Each structure stands twice: as structure tokens, then as C-alpha cells.
Amino acid sequence: MDLEEKISLLAAAAKYDASCASSGSGADSGSRGKCGFGASVPAGVCHSWTEDGRCVSLLKVLFSNSCRFDCAYCVNRASADLKRGSFTVQELVELTCEFYRRNYIEGLFLSSGIFADPDIVMEKLIETAKTLRRESGYGGYIHLKIIPGAGEKSIREAGVWADRLSVNIELPTDKSLQTLAPQKSGQVILGAMGDFSGLSAAFEEDRRKTRFLPQGKSAAPVFAPAGQSTQLIVGASAEDDRQIINLSSALYRKFSLRRVYYSAFIHPGGSARGSAGDLRLPDIPGPPLVREHRLYQADWLLRFYHFAADEILENNEPFLDSHIDPKTAWALRHLDFFPVEINRADYETLLRVPGIGAKTARRVLETRRSRSLSFDGLRRMGAVLKRARYFITCGGSFIERPDDPRRIRRILSDIDGAGMQLPLFEF
Image (cartoon, rainbow, N blue to C red; front, side, top):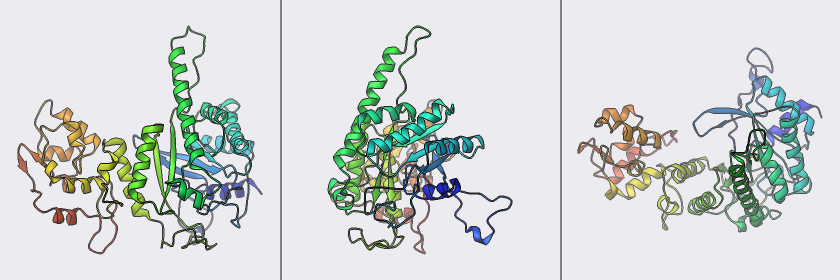
């Protein structure tokens, strides 16, 4: 198998990991030819976004798509009838360096099927990162997957060479994991997350102690400075949104995760119950993309808006509203909290207002030091008054009073008159 074929095969095999979003050209090359001016080969290159909103391009591939595990939801499962292939360490190193020199990418996202003992698989991923750093002098971003079952020693070395590590929790409960991926263990996955947290704290303590060493003596190495993340598959098992949000909240608290990624379940065969007809898989018409979108919005509330999990969904609400974002849903359930006076409210209160994000809330506080705010000024700061208008006052004045929650809900719904889902950028 030549290198171009490996790239195509192992990039396609990696696209289901949501830890960075694929965004290659989706057009059919047959309609405009396979070559020519402006032609591109999207295989292997995906786009990801930093916390400050910058878009970065990553080489996103598997080391190998061979796997001994037979997870029902995975396209690379052992029983799948597909072509198998693997990179060598040197091929991946050269590929990463060449793509970087040509400005195709800014980093590497490397995972693998579990083709051998987890520590052996991890050894190959670590060797790739180590060779890039030491022999090629590569200083770009590297994200490595922790293979479930790998020992603490492997995680320790991976964290020395990679910027970020992640181990996918896959499903919300151990019961679902045992049903759909019986060779995996929730306890083992959480144990790897715990190992990372312990190692990160230990490395940070070592760095603190060696920070002021005399010149010429080296400080302790940095351990995975971009932290750890995980992925949850949404819709492959029966858990509701409340269980997922509670789990994510617990993971953030216990393991200090940087991100939980949510991946709408895609049947391995591309259709309901997949080509293999596995009855363990749910019979759904397609990926639950709206549900995935709402979970990301709820996750944003957990991480940046200081909401607790039980505020986003209460005990009698198993699922997030598919028609309005979770922040607006909370506001309509708690109209007694409103209206909020823009010229007096503190930061935490401003964060509760639909249409006012964290950046806008900070701008409001800064501007109020020198002058009072008007609705016009609030709009210029980035507030979405279409949403905020029902929940705020400026100098005691309303734009519109929240007289009928059902009417407000209908107006702010993401579904237009034709029943089409509208895109959301602010909430």
C-alpha cells in the first residue's frame, strides 16, 4: 500500500473522533475533475478551534485502523469488513513535517485502533511524537489519544511529548459500554483520566519547585500543557441528556478536563442498524445532530456561564428542548429572576441573560465605570437584543415586557415557519 492510499484510508478512519471537527471539501471531485487549478486533497486535514476562536488545521489520522476490539458503534471494529492498513513511525514523522513545511497544517492529531496490547499501541504513538520533537525539531501542536488499558508509565511519557492527551469515555454509563463495547471498561477509562490528573499535578509541583533554579540548571518538563479531553457518543445508547450533562459536570470537577466533546451517533453502515444489522444499535433515521448541538450549548453553560448541571435540566426534564437553547429555556422557567437592570447587575447576573455572552458581560462592566448604558450601546457591545429584550431594562425602561412565556418561546424558537432548523451562533 503506497503512502497516498494510507493517508486516504487512515484519515477516513479517524474522522469519527469529534475531538477536532473535520471540515474538508465535500464536493464530488468527479463533477469537476480530479486535478486542475484550485484542486485540493482534504484527506487527513481537519479544522479545529482554539478557546479564543482561532481556527487551526491539524493532520488527523489513525496510526492503524486494525483493531482487536469489536465495539458495535465503531466503523473500525474487528468484525467490520474493510481494508486495513498502518503507518510506520517514520512515514508519519515525514508526513507531518512535510505538511507543516508546506503550511497545510499547524499540528498533529494522532489516534489508533487497538491492534495489540494497549501499551504497545501507545509505544508507537509516543515514538512518533518523540521522534518529531527530538530528531525533526518539530515544535508544533501534538494531540495523542490514550489507549484504554495503557499504564501510567505510558501516559507519563506521552504527556512529556504531546500538548494534549485524551481518552474517550465513549458512552455515558458502564452498563451501555458493556452492552456495545464489552471489551472496554468504564473503570479503566476513568482510571486513565485519574492517572493523567495525578501526573499533571505532580509535574506542576516539580516545576514550581525548580522554577527558580540557578542559571544553567533545567526546570522540570511540562506535562501536556493543553490538558486532557474526552468524547461521548450521543444517541448510541438509551441515556437521556440529564445523565450526560451530570456526567460531564462530574468529569470537569473531578479530572479538570478542558473539554468534553459530543459526537452524534452515526451507524457504522451509514443506515439504520448499520450494514451488519446489529440489534444492539438503536433504530434511528440519522445522526441526532440537533441533540448534539444542544449538548454543546449546555456544556458551554457549565464551563463559562457558571450554571450547575441541575439548573440546566431539572429532575422532571430528561432532555434538552430541541427548539430553544438551554439558556433561554432556563430564563423562561425563571421569569421571577428578571428583568435584569443592565446598569446595576453584577457579572454573574448578566451571564444569566439570554443574548448576553461572557465577553459582552465583561464589556458592560468595564463601560459602566465611566457612563451609563443604553440599549443601543448594549447592541454595539455584542448583545443579541432579539433574545435579551424580554429579560432586561436600561435605566428602568423595557424594550418589551415578558408578558407571555409561550409567545416568547415561539418567537425565539430555532424552527422557522417551514419547520427547518436554523443555525445558532449566540445564546
